[in-house]
Image 1 (cartoon, rainbow, N blue to C red):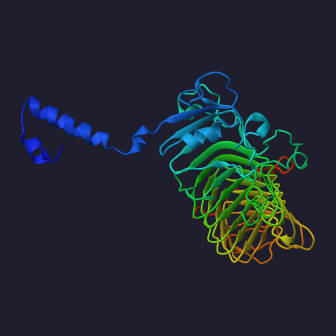
Image 2: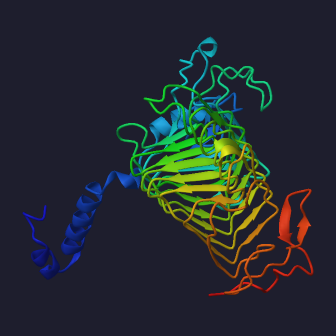
Image 3: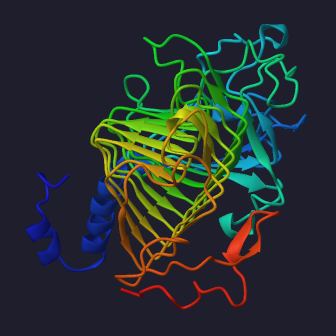
Length: 408
């Protein structure tokens, strides 16, 4: 159209005909617009038994235990998936018409946002509540697991619940969002050569950087490492996530990361995870994680050390963090942190048990460590918490940590 009637000539025309031509020009541009304009909201409800199963509305949502897998397969760039409360598996067992393949997972896609926590009636994203409407991703394909920490019934469980960068075409950026889910009962005990022995909750590889929000990653287990998460050569952003009671086998009960990873953890809780080395989080081989307003509590490691955090040829920056009641056994070092390159600012380290809280003294500024240094803004008094019995590690009235940090 523009070749037949250049823009300069269109603008010189006057009268109704020129307005018609301009409208035609706009129409031709819109027809050539990218496919992102076709993006839509796709609805997912595991418990739905009626409707046409197309995902176009709550009453016609993708339904069934594998509904989220089918919704992800249909999703295109710009889509949002609204997922109602219920339990979802990456795949159905053979007895229910599925493949039962343990290697199947929920695969993140670029510019596809996945939100859980819906009741199934909402018309706006702000109406959902992931707390009141628990939306669970489970690796229990056959629905026969005995409660964690038992391994009875776990032999057929999915190796990974969520993957990014695990296969060709899966590398994703921050536009891939997973928000408002509980991930449980992943069982990464497969082949090491295929990385099916790590990252039972989430595995992130190959330079991926998804955004993970409002997730509870709980009761997952891996034989090699990363009971909750495994991150390799990738830098995701985690916000308001809880990584709890995962078993990482050899490395990283909560999270194992390796090789040039630079993730940001914001307002996250890493609690009650276990591994032979790095009960909470491990950073190995040139990783530089940042932990901001995070809690490391009651994680435990064996003789490998690093009850809360283990660093090897890596650095970690921790600001406004609390590292308490972590432990090591079997002669392991660093009940709080094992590694020589941690930097602590405005943080509390207390009540960690084992041969020593640190394998080497970290850089410290405006930090509270009972019996620790009292220079550079640090205080050596005992912090007071609301309730250690209920894991409420907010500062109690009268705590020496109140107003003792630096706003800089």
